[in-house]
Length: 205
Image (tube, rainbow, N blue to C red):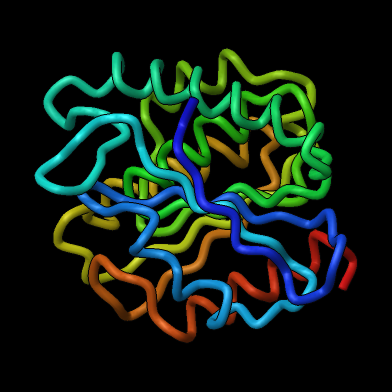
C-alpha cells in the first residue's frame, strides 16, 4: 500500500477529494502548500508518496526503464483508488492530479480506471506509450475530464515532445483541455487558478 497523508477539508464530512502525485525526487512534503493555494473549503487532499526511493525523495518509475515502474505504480494506485470509497470518497468525487512523473501516472491511471472521476489533472508531464494506452481504454475513458498544463520553457520535459500527444487523445474521444504557460518545470499562480476552475467545474461549482 502506498503511503499517503490526508489533509481534511475545512467543511466537515465533504466527500470531495483531490489525490495529488508528486514528481521525481519529491514527496508528500512538496505539496502541503496546495490546499491553501487552491482555496476550496470543500475539498479534501490526499498527498501520496511514490513507491521507489530516490535520493532522499521518491520516484514512480526509473527514467531509464519506464514501463516496469509505471506498471507497478499503476497497480498500487489502482489498489489505493479501490480502497478510497470505503473511506467516504466515492470515485466520482475524486480528482486525480499529478506533477511531472506524477502527471504521467495520474493520466495513465485515470484514463485506464474503469470508473469516472470528477477530473484528472496533469501538470508538466507526458503520456507514456500513448498508442498502447489508447488501445487499452475502458468505456469510462470517454467520460473522463482531463486538464493538461505545460510550460513553454520547460527544460526537463520539453513541450515539443508533449504537444503531438494531445491530438492523439482528442482523436480517441478523450475530453482533454490543453493549456500552455510561460514557465519552466514548476507550478505557477496563473496555472493554479486554471486548475482551480477545472476542479470546481468537476463538482458543479
